[in-house]
Every structure is written in structure tokens, then in C-alpha cells.
Image (cartoon, rainbow, N blue to C red):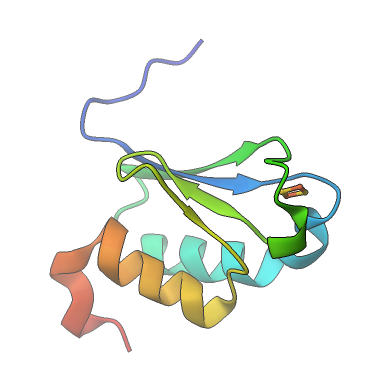
Length: 94
Ligand code: FES
């Protein structure tokens, strides 16, 4: 098992049957923002199993903040990035 770096931030995305139909856009947005801001070394996107809130698909989970984000669109993914992943980059993300 690979050991996580202490400063690593993890963003989980639900890869259950329902969420995986809708989460591509949000995943891609987050992934692009993470790469564009040079955070690929410290922020990782990981799969998680169905969380039982499929009606709110796609679902993301931020373990550092113990927060579930529901119905995550590309726009919401950008807000998640600005608020939870890299608040210091808030003004640099268009
Ligand atoms: S498939 Fe994502 S919460 Fe069920």
C-alpha cells in the first residue's frame, strides 16, 4: 500500500452506478484545476463506493472537512476547488 504524504489532500468521488454516469464533467474540472495550479503532487482524486445518496448524484466527499458535496456540476466543482482545495488560488481561477 502506498503511503500518503502528510500534506496530501484527498477528494473522493463516488463511483457507484448512478454517480459514475454523471461525474465525468466535475471530475475533469477538478482534475484540470489541480493540474493547472501545480497541485497534482499534493491533491489526489480517489474513488469511493456508493454512499447511499444516489438521488443527489454525483456525490463528492472532502475528508479534510468531513463534507459531502452533492449534485456536483462543473461549476460546483470549481467552487469546491476554490473553497476547500486551494483557497489561496481563489483569485487566480477564472
Ligand atoms: S451511486 Fe453515488 S451515492 Fe450511490
